[in-house]
Length: 442
Image 1 (tube, rainbow, N blue to C red):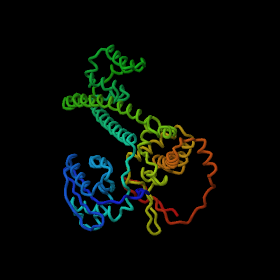
Image 2: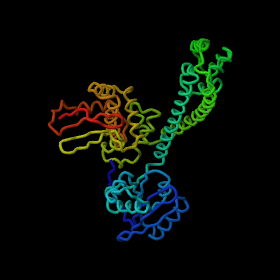
Image 3: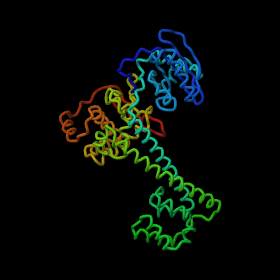
Image 4: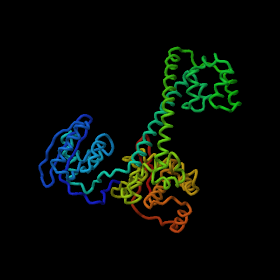
């Protein structure tokens, strides 16, 4: 939910709509108290942007100026946020697209026209927009770090899957002998013996010493691999598969070797920034929020206590709260599509981890499954409850106390609610990326 900031706006000397692009930005400017619109372009370089802002600052004698643009993070924001007299209003691209379609049903668009539409949104609906209020440096750094780490892990997973597919074709036995393909031991093994033929040429003692040097201390497991090697048969002898496959195995294992220390460096940096963060004690007090999920929770909620007026706003922002569409006697409830997928994944994973550490969380999940809810729906429901608790602790700067929560829940827990006669509820089921009706309840 994107609600306007309660803080009063400054007296702006000018309003600007900026339609950003890779090479040039189109801008539309309107002086406060005037209906005349000026238009132009500015190059997307630090020097050109600085000259443009400096010219405007001199023209309006350092008075505040409001700028609307379709970006909340990125190179344009980074170039503009350093100027203290600029107040930035990020516009969701879906909002500006819907606003454009109101006047251009054909779908026609142009950069100068989009700049004017952004200017109109700013001048006519500023009371419904939220000015950019960046988090603290530590929080923004943590946000970037955990997102980049997730990207590296996703790349590692993609390379591992590619490697797995290759091994199924030319060396399937390696999948039985190597537990995790992205580890240093697995990569070294495949670089040395990319096929069964090369492995069979090695002496048993050589293979045994290899596993021992890679801290594989389970002697029984080592001997089992060596024994299985004796009866192993090649999956293929087709050179068309083997030669390119060997080249790709060598490439993928080298890429995994490069990613592994990089992820470890990110983990160390995240740990240092997280432990020095003012909200460390709050996030670390929650079940399931350890070295990985704790920093991601800090990055999700941020450091601005005025950003969310209620827990519902936080639930909607993270994508955990469902969307209700009501029309006449029908009501359709579906999960939120327009949200940060990273934040939604963070809450979902955290809720899943919390069940291993928190008894009431596990019981809630099992109760949802007993009602017929799927695994992910039950986890989202648990995440929805956790966010209400997290919001209150974060707002009050108080660590989570499970005994206190259970006592409070016991006091406020009511009996079974009477069944209400409200609108007809159409229940939808996700199918192939779409939703189809499955049942009707009243």
